[in-house]
Image 1 (cartoon, rainbow, N blue to C red):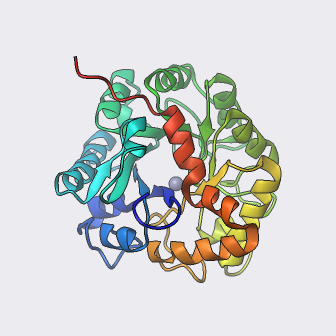
Image 2 (image 1 turned 120 degrees about the vertical axis):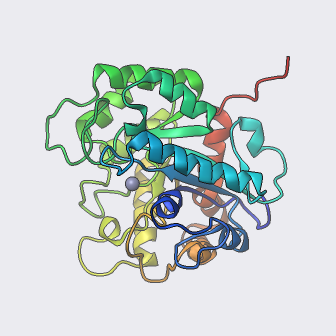
Length: 318
Ligand SMILES: [Zn+2]
């Protein structure tokens, strides 16, 4: 960890997408929900940066995905972020904020497993197969009951992700795709930014059976701060995040709940949260509700422990 008393790790933000669309600097962008200056000030140790490039992307998904990866790597060159590629990268001391790349939807692969391997080389260690719609790999939550679920190509991609040491992210998948992934995937499955459907009945949230399946795989679910995923009606606040956390803990047990804020991917936030600077306040509220040990796990420990066990070891120089 870089500063505070425990790890703070957030498993989902769409900041690279905002910069690609609207410009701005990863270092300082007061108009957004997070930037490196504020991550540092808030004591965040690890931020996962999603590459979101759906099939409808203006310049095509591959082009836009590569631009977002380049923004990430330029920040690494400027020593703004320390990249997490191998499990050792989480064990050594870090001088600043660690960053990890994820792919939110596999549209930039254009169905080609060779491009999956290329994105791995570019640093991508987490991937969701599709966003809300369908693609060549799987159906998303917009597909009504039934559907195709995981396609044959989707199965191949999941198996190759397992071989490479990448985490499969089931946030955004349809129920059928979800259960197909659970049956095909070896090792832990994560839902980087999803809440509990028993608390807020939204199609983007997970049923108790789904939460149990993620926990049984050894995976983690990241709490999403988007108000419509937190509360079915009215405004949402910090108390709603705690309610989801409490329910997930009761269903999944300890060590399987984390943070997946969705910062810069949503147009509003719960009362009491203005951006990444609010994470220490959330941590304080969690300590009151759950005690220090459980708070440490939710605020970062659960996801970091998982990454240490799943990420490949750094290849040794020949
Ligand atoms: Zn999302």
